[in-house]
Length: 275
Image (tube, rainbow, N blue to C red; front, side, top):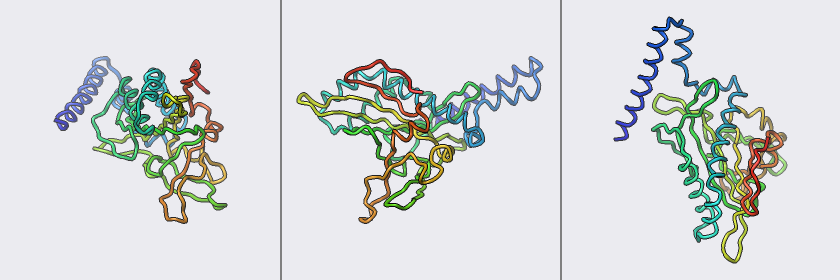
């Protein structure tokens, strides 16, 4: 059945291109206009030469996740208060329900990785569309200042100072994922549920949503170990533990304030997009 679905999607895209082509021919359009119609899907690898458009795509992706969680915020508060599961599991469930409720323009391609929510989809820029591999990971902790990151969850290199020495560790995700003859822009968003324990249950205080830059933006956000968005991770190198790091929300905000957005749940405050 999945193979049939994929084939139908490919046939649908071919019909759209055919209609655009025939309409342009009837209208006497030139080759340039026909080419523009056919190339409505942008190769994400070309965004390496258009970083401002890449940032706009990531901004739109973050807006989608923020909107989904904003719409679901009252349910999230009740679920956190009532559920007895591990807080991390609750956060994963809330993120999945919120994003599925709002919905994405799905592409029938399966993605893999150590991230809770994974979807192949279309993302739309005013001038073009791009195929995207959207990864959204959820954390639930009592501290809202950092998010623990595994190297397999980022396409950036992790350049930071550890024990007084500079380190440069490659992320485990590619900047562009190639599957089935198509290319998908890697976009990673982290959702942090900040809560406090109360007598009646867990009180959800803030939902913090952050968009981690794609690795093509390395020089803008983390060019070297001293100019970084990372802080030391929870792993102990002396014990041979796998390298991990922490994303500093404050450092990321200093680079681009819009990349970190807060939904104040309890007490509730009106949401204003942070630019």
